[in-house]
Figure (cartoon, rainbow, N blue to C red):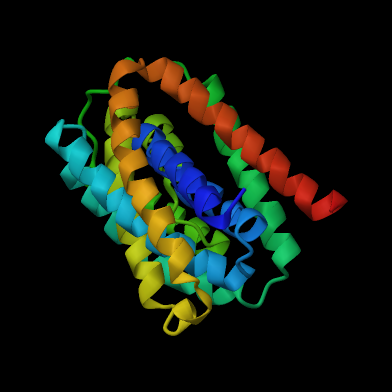
Length: 249
């Protein structure tokens, strides 16, 4: 299979995940860029942030039009994570990659278990306090800065289980968090785009943006509890893959 076709297929899957699940894009994009398209880990991380920023911004617009974004709580959630993300990102450069990967997989697994075990919240429409959103966002920012991802795979479980968002609102609002975190991370990576093959990046990003629109339509047709279970299953699969990669490859 040619590199172009692989880029298109991988991009479509990443976009579908972001549009339908509000996260998982960078978790899926980084392995695809490394294992399928031959990027170095450093280039793959930067490329993933570019792809996820463009795709999540597009998906955010679609969810905002549908009324699925809670701007006040989401803005507080996202803004609170910027500084912790930058500080944790600086600390991450001093830690072994295997330790970071193992931590990433562990957090993903815990989030998946929480999502799979959480019943649909009957209090989903209660008022969310901005202070609580900011505190949760700061913790999420630290984790995502340390682990090097946009944070959607953690933001959705946090919004559902901590802030009592219904699944549709969690997906839409998480895209605001992803876009903000990804932009903040890109701004700290001056020169990081040097190793990126733009002939691969362009079709990958284009397919991801189109896939995000399809994901948004899929999310509108599937119930919140089913999306929640699907998201949890995806997280468990990602966690298992990463642990296998660390300990058995």
